[in-house]
Image (tube, rainbow, N blue to C red; front, side, top):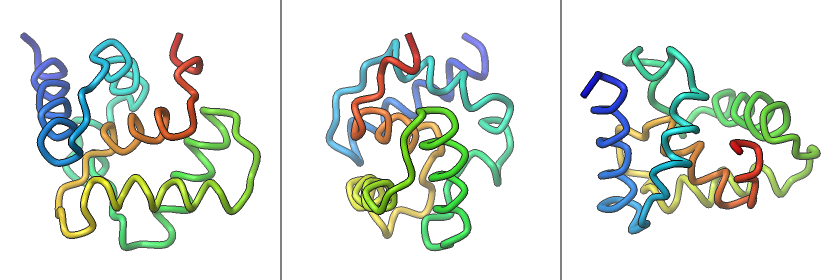
Amino acid sequence: MGKRDDLIAAYAEDLKTKCKMTPDMALLTKVTIGCGPSIYDNDASTVAASQASELETIKTNFLMKKLGLADSPKLLEGINAVIDVYGRSERKKYRAVVYYMLVKQFGKESAYK
């Protein structure tokens, strides 16, 4: 197993234990690959959920550009709902896990087919 496989296994464990979700491993793998090299960078691999600029970046670059969603207040509501599920007090919120949950939240699995 390579480093990416190890990370995907860690993300799946977070989904199971912290988010109480059974991950779709094929989708999780595709979302992780879609994150690119950021998964290997300590800072970029996590989401700073308390920073408004980080949430805005997720909304613009991921939800609108990658998933093709139209700008609306529902996007930020969705991001906040995902962060609530992950746990606001959880210090290490992996970007791939947050993105995976957003894909599920907005029903945009087709973006990774």
